[in-house]
Image (cartoon, rainbow, N blue to C red; front, side, top):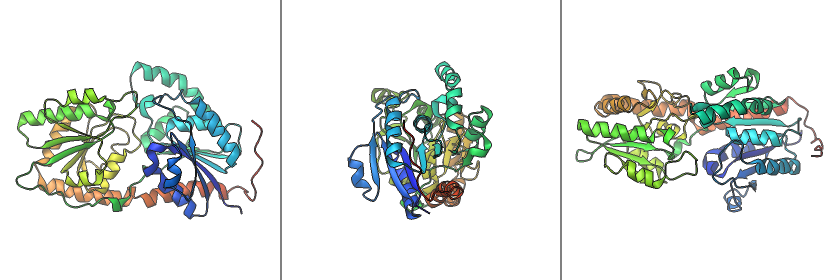
Length: 389
């Protein structure tokens, strides 16, 4: 049997979290080409063992309607590479690549839907209208033959099945993108007597990630006299819902919380923190922030939002609060900071949860199994010629 050929498509911003799957597939003897969206030629030097093909930049346009030039480029790449399997990451790129792959019905299409984002998890009028307009096109794209959808949480899977955009038979649950446990030193959180505890929110600067909720909770706790440093670690982003630099400066000017800007040493920052807080109401898969918080052995406060609640067992490794509720968020923070025994138990349980559920090796194994199960069930002793497009 010929080696299975994989065309793996993901955004350059996700390089660190997605390359493990490419490496895992290669180690199983598969032939992997990476279509790097928003990438450039510099990426080729980072992975000399792979064929890396930079694809059209999308700029700041993150609309699911945007990027039809990318459809053309992906279609061309499929024709050139003649892969057995095409694997894309995110709802938007899954939809666009499904359009690109429509002429190639024999190809196995895999779309990892790493959260349903603004399109399905916002109640804004624009989102509601867009959802109505996109339901039929998404169903036509995702319910093609030989298509598998990978969901990161059960809520997302159940929602798309309910809306008849997905079917149970084609749906697979793989919890998150995984985390490299050895990159995080899960030491017990210790605060020196002369230092205030750090409450850290690592995040992209998008309002729906709960940045405003965190800032309001910090104000509430400062008014109560709770002594702690409330820090936000995250740089600017081109998301259309992003918080600008000027807005962040204005939101934190009262000093209740501190904006650190973009932070590269997240493992070190988490090791210094007494608590990780992520009050998101965005359409998450399982947020990478929370996977890393578990790996770092940190107590967590997050919301009952789909994806967020999958990283926390309430009262075990953290506390789950309602979305958009600064008071409840403040209460949870205060409770954990004020109970050392509780916090230390949650820290131990977070690391255990990461080891059991989120280690990168397990996520890679589950993903590569999706590749091989479909491939081995079909005759691929040779590559069939590509249709004309």
